[in-house]
Image (cartoon, rainbow, N blue to C red):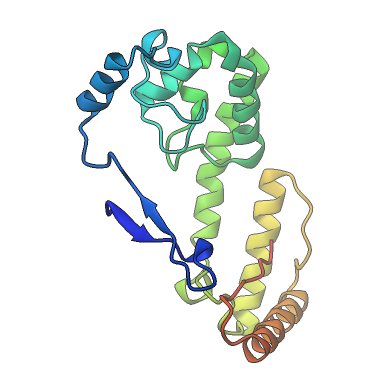
Length: 208
């Protein structure tokens, strides 16, 4: 990051605002030295639990060691179990291919551990089903950009139905005609939004 950069949202009426990253060039050791010199105490995440950074208890950018450090704090155990429950219900891992359930499995009840294991197996099946969707129909900026063919709509309906059954949720658009109707609606909305608000960033609608 730059030491300083213009901050457009706060620049108004001829006054320019800026973000100033005053200590961005400091090393980690220099930061800790300055804190000690000021007579300040480090956060207990560093001194008690051994974390290398302080953020959310379970941060999507955390290293495995920092996730383990967070899980070693008793105050975070209920949150940990709740987040693993979300993994189990959704079949999506917390960090890409890293499952939070694997960070501190000893904190899970037998039932939750079993549910997490089932979710991992379901995730493999879900990903295989989703891989059937061709690249030109996957989400991109401005999605949807094309109308699927009848065969493609039939495939999308099948994908939606199988994923919904696997995850245990109810979804709409489970036949080719309803998928095509939904695409027509979304494409019409995109066209209307683009013509009415040409300078605004496009906000895509999701089928799920």
